[in-house]
Length: 370
Image (tube, rainbow, N blue to C red; front, side, top):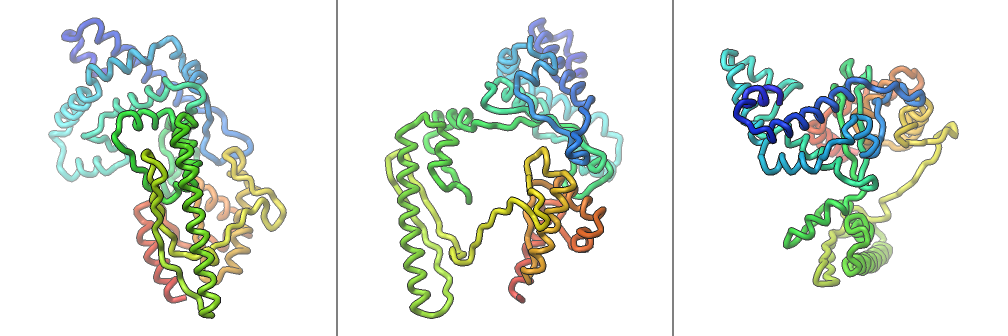
């Protein structure tokens, strides 16, 4: 941005230079803010240092409360500055790297400092500034700073640079624009039921007709699945053998505005057990909230729980964790704890998402042999 402003300063009008200065001021304020991380929380000394702030608190912390973000966003949209800056960056990069060898250039492209030639970095800033124009109740800003463990080369996707994230708390504010502009919207996924809950999150009670249609669709699907499960159990008892019910599909067209399609599951309900544990073997509370999940007591209690489960389950366990950084923290803690670490340090685990397919294949092979 600085090089772009210096190169075209004599050609740009005063209005353009003014907005370029405003954008630079926002970028400098964010950089300076990320350079001064707060002190880590005593309850989680090894966790990633982070804090959650409202949009207003974040703007006051950066001293950007006197800048009209709506005008800046309008200027970015009309002037197409992100696209222009992308072309300028690609040209400057190609000129600076024209004298380097091909192998060295490929090495730099694969490094951690990779810069895309197709997506403007300013467009990401534009999206973040758009989020900052939302209300207090629509979302929160979460600044995060890397810790000593992540900087020392942990496994997985450990943080190496400070980041700014915007967490949406009311998806209906963004989804309403899609509903108004699109001819039809298809939501596909494995966790869309109950439909009434999804409709509440995306519509926020603004469309009573759609909300009632979602409730009726959920009632219809529940009734059909309940009757089919009862029929399957009766047939199994009569046959005296274990049978796997075939996957069924249910289509519910409860109104002209909403149509639902539900696929049955290949695992029968008799093979599924859901248990919620509030405490572990030593009666320590398993509190996995962000402020306490990285404490030594919670991590050790989780390790003891997994140890007890591994002694009962004969063919192994699959443990899902919320993030790679939390996985790194747990494994590092279990390695320090001799009682827990002996059972987990020798187990192989995927360090990146691309390795999951290989681990799934290995698990299927073990499952077929057991």
